Length: 425
Image 1 (cartoon, rainbow, N blue to C red):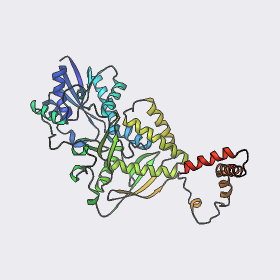
Image 2: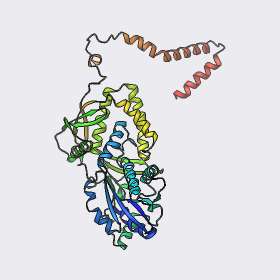
Image 3: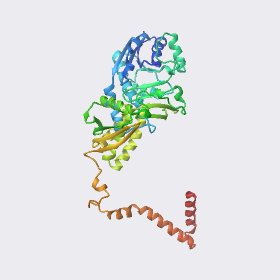
Image 4: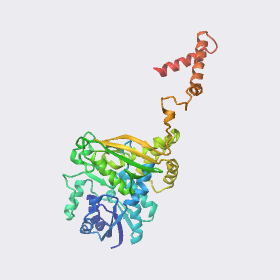
């Protein structure tokens, strides 16, 4: 063999046919790397499958804790949400997978890195930005940008011609990505945005109509913006997310049907299930509302949008993300407390929140008169707050009076009135 290629391997249709394709077209020894980011049973039997396809080895990297601590929780603390609804499950996993793949390539002396991302998708960018950060000198092979396979049907035919065992079929054509945080569903009939997803599509969440008729209450505890307890019990990040996935899934929480803007410029449609993540985002946001002031919350919302773009585009390994993390950390020092939530038929209802750093003062906010707030003080505040509005109104009054009297400002006043009429109508 001329050189070694480390392939990011899932065992799905695309990476299964890439193994023989690399051997045929690059005369390469293929080492498959499977990243355990919480996809569970999907990892079972991967080594036998990879070897049957021609790989010389399969190496599984357990990245669950790294994924949760280094990427998921910082993204939650940032409040990052893409396309108004997408909690970035696939996007978040790619930086840690790409880094681990590049590091493995270094250890085994590989000359190239390969992935199974299509030329239409976002993941090709995310993987290759990670490669650029950790192995900029290695060749990158992206078969979907080279071969003449153009569809999943073509890929199935390629596999069949070479006796490659794959689980995908022409009848089961959905493309799925599963990890600790979520599962996504794309392709097939879902490509029609008018198509309603069938019940049997969903794997993590029950249909809200079939969820329990009795609501379930939970309490999430946070320290400095990090979720640390569930109903008072300390849990690791992985344990907490898994527990919330089970709770949210049982009550039909966390489904999202999204038409999103891909990085390469086209729109795509995907169905996402993120039960635990939806619960965490809701609780964290509610606690922030209790402890952060208005201006800091506004800044946080601006940062969240930029952070979401960064994650979605795979720009994780850079100074921009480190700078944003520093800002987020400054906002999270007092995001400590407990949020009580009610889960019921696909909904998350806020049932209570408390924090030792709460800016909410019941004595000040109460309609009862307890002598803690002098309502007469509001008059001076309103007088100053309304100063620009009052000055503008007085100017218009003067201009109108001059116009009616035929004064020297009549022409300008007429223009002002005409401008106001045009913009009012």
